[in-house]
Length: 596
Image 1 (cartoon, rainbow, N blue to C red):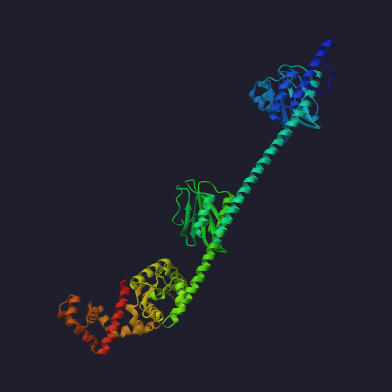
Image 2 (cartoon, rainbow, N blue to C red):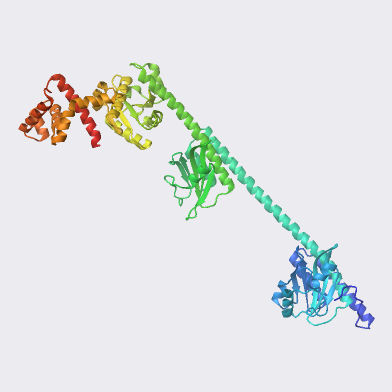
């Protein structure tokens, strides 16, 4: 083991020949150094260094290892090696000739690497030395200032010492090579930094472009609200900017608008549950999912405070970017403002129509010109309002029922709202019974429960009287046990005037006092006295028509009427007959409930 202080060895006594050789070596050294300074790529400089060193020093092979942050020497380039595995050599810190060079900052060599005990050995590196056949090894430091950045090695496959002039020559070359290598590293770092700056600039450009696009979309969405646009326009704007398909849901999950430019995307007719929209609603902001078909679903909740108003759903084949999500959220905010605006307008219109409804119900006919003008301004022809609808639910407040009636009032060019605790609708309907059935079916579906609906025909524009009759009939229904039916007032009107619906016990007592003996007899004997008497009164006491309607012989009918005589006494007297007919009609209405 030695370093650059080893005395100069000259094997030839011919001084002139030695000088000429040294001149050639120095000339080659300087030419090589100039060539190295012209290179810029790090890999190219490394390959050039080991190739030039191989030609300059004339050993069997040369290689260069750079120092890593953990002190390990890693082979980066070689010339003249024969073993592929040697090019993967890594020497741990403090071992081998390289470790000595790093520690001292001076050249070092050994004549037989595997046999020397002057340096610590690494078994892994020694295993690589054998197939390469390396014996003699010289290492010189690559110095940048006082810092060793690597080691340049020259090696022979035979045992020999290295002359001082060889050490000096390789050291001089290593000094030039270190400068070129450091310049290449600086150049490489500068180029990498430039690429990072360019990449960052492109990223900023893209971000600015996306933000400008998002701002443009936001301005367009704001204009939609200001000019009175709706959900369809918002969906179309989003599709134009975000592509894919957009679906708008209301607070109940029904689709109120949708737009798509991709025919491959099938938009839902209604929300599935649980789904992306539900996830967005629970988070209060947005959610993104993907399905097995490769589609991405992004939903943004539409809400005012903690009140959900609906959702926007974007469906497309590409994963949404953060700016896309932000745009969708902005659109949801704009949609929320639009819904609040429409709700405020609707509530104001509902309030005005409700006030007009109240005026018509409390005013005595005829209607004044101011009321007609106010109704005409809302597309309502007062003269055509020929029916009053009263709806009552035992579980839903009258305000909510009235709101539902208001939503459907335009179909009958009418007015709707709440009056005296009852939901009411003034309608232009050519067929009142059909109106009763339609309104009942719609309310039952929307309210999700039983509801009573009564329609009374208006005469001489006296809506107040029709409202009172329909309301009393609706209350009488409850007394009779009717909770879910749509009907005209006709079957109930007379009885509603006779009985106070709030005193149901009086109605029950009247029916019991009048019909209880007959009902008990029919129940006990399995007879048909109550139906027989009902049919008898229905045919105005005509025996032949009554017998025909009952499909019995007239003698059978007479026997039944005699039996009624024996049970009730003189039931044919005018007062008693009227009382019995009223009781039988009420009993028949209640029986309809039981059969239903």
